[in-house]
Length: 292
Image (cartoon, rainbow, N blue to C red):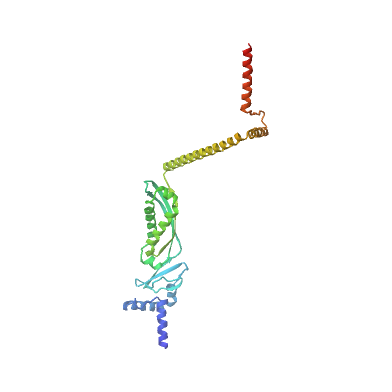
């Protein structure tokens, strides 16, 4: 029982603390491992400072022993043991990385040359994949983001780019996330920062927008005139049905003019009164001529 306990403890020590997998180490591997372990014991007071490494909370360590990755997942955080001469480790930062995409000159689908820049937020979720599957994961992600931005925006028109930034950013994020999955990368967010168009095109767009606003203003003014004419027509029909209402309207107009402290007041007279006065004077003038 004691032997079985020592054996299980040794296996646990080899697999977890030292990172030894019995199926991966051959005869030569065991010999080199034994020599390295013996060297660490002989130089114990000094070697302990060389073999123990501290891995921070946001970091992971991928350990290569004799050129092989020690485990399916990276080690850390905390203390890890690195054997001299046979172990090499690579630290991987798991924090979110900001990737600024420089301005890219793009020819849109409607043959307009524009410059677009953006920013990509991503993080490493698998340190082993980021180290083993790609040479420089950050450089590869940066170049892929530039290419994807140009490819996606090249299929859109200028108006679609200006109006649908969120949809375009979401499609770029989906493409990047699918392409970088084997690298252990998770794309958190993609944003398009600025869309730069030529100055001449800006003036043309401004002139077009101004012409559109003027046409809309004219249409609104015409609709207002039409509504006003309909209201005046209705008002004239009401005044025709009630002649006394016209007299009240005259009095209201006089009251309004008088409150403005004007020196001159124009008093409107009904046309029938003027016609009556004009008809009477004409009849009197005709009688005088007949007598003569």
